[in-house]
Image (cartoon, rainbow, N blue to C red; front, side, top):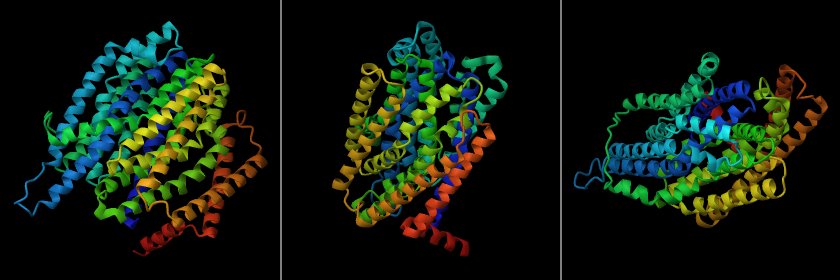
Length: 530
């Protein structure tokens, strides 16, 4: 990557991290005030339903369909600017208006249906709830379902900004809405309770739309509600949507399946809460790094997907995967060692007891190895979307879903094992999907898995293994009684292990002369000279 690219990705990571930290503070306050209570179990289920419905139907379609077509129109427009004899295929922003208006219409209809049939939806997804909890979840769902209208608009406006090389505002946008929810917890929760919290989440998504819409006006983009079902680009988008939709189902269906099977366990409130917060930490860590890389490379992949730009395309894929491995593998090792401290520091206070914290930490332990698989899946999905090969993410996703549900059924219902095995099922599903995508990549897009790539990958693995062994050794010497220790002791323990692990990891990579580390060092030196 060029110096400017490194700077951009670094700024994106920090902006995303700031937003995620505020999101984490929001979840910490949720854990403090509601813990593993029936109210929280109802709220988490109601919150997950509209988010999952959006992800199942619209999320990947926007990422995998809208952004490539939008960029393709922009590129064609730019090429034809000096060729008046060539008929233009249309204006990119005009297509954006049609696309976003269509999404608003469809999400509006889905929201209306979700409100009308909220009770039946809750009964289907949370089959282990009693009548009182079903009623509360249904009431909260009626408030939360319209979120998908604002989520759809947010996704599209984000795609437009990223396509115009405006990356920081989309990375920062959730910080504004998270601040609003934090304000609610601190000052309004005692008056309006869980119902007011649901309204606060709905309003927070509306705030995100406004936060993105204002800077978009400076790029000369003006939104006008416009429906045109005969638009050729919209028709093209619809035709390619179904396989891309299915390709995104692995994570959201995994959440629904996990929530459903958690509700069937004896301690369903604690199981649902533990599953939610283990996935919060999982996505916080893997999501910050993975999506920062994905958000930067996907428009680039879409712009270089043609055969004429094959070399650049392959370089983007190799650099994206290498960067993900170099960062996420060692981070997952550190998180595994410090998983108990992480959960206790973040959530164990108020209604979030030590027993719930232990179950959450055990679930997180099962999910941690999936961080690498999640990263591979997210990056390769975008590779296939850019190449218009959406059937492969669909196949990988469906295979992962089938395995996830089958294992949950075996572990939880048939064998009666602990809720931790819900997370184990999720890890197995992520692994299967990632393996399928990597095998297809090796066969269909040759030039990524070359000798240099594997050499650097193994150097990363060796360095991470040394890090893990050293971190475990240091941790065992400290012998921290995590669930009884005070907050400062847990923080100092985590800092000591993490800092030592990072230093050891970088030192081993330096000794092994890992290409990525030396490349970053060289570019950093050049940047200082400039």
